[in-house]
Image (cartoon, rainbow, N blue to C red; front, side, top):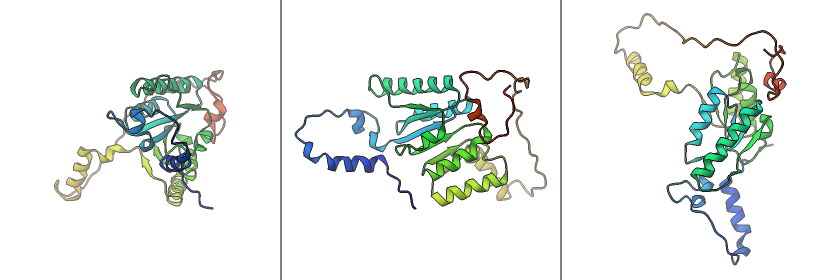
Length: 241
């Protein structure tokens, strides 16, 4: 069975036809909703759900928050404190910058599957722990969501291939977090090498920046604000530390 994607513009168009008999009722439409005053009309904004709002995910959601053509409508994180605080930030931002007073248009979720069930979400931003990347992205593709996902793709080639197959099958738009490949200096370097401008290439040195040290591996009580079982998900069980 082919799942038909039903976007907000189609919904508004149908709603307008359904409301033809209500023309005599007075109403007020904000300039923000119509796309005036240097804003984008609500019907044309890309609705975004953010899955994982830790260090990297926090930076990503703030990037989308600053764009006039996107609207964050959902936040998912298994850490309740981070999730609730991020929802508050979104509410405060839109309430302050779009003249909506007390804005309540963003919802928090502990389980990403509940977020993906929403038909009004166009795009998901995935910045979960690495072992969750492919399972969440495959589910998002099946739900007809376009995807931006952080590095890495999967933990194995089999996972990577499974995600590619899902993206191809469901026709979703997929963007991977390797934006350095598109930056001017990297593109220019590739063009120089591929066109022989540096002479014959005979040696390639590959390096990677170091990571920060992790925390203690000594088992500890699970924080009450963390859904540790959901954090583990498909990973083998290990005690929290």
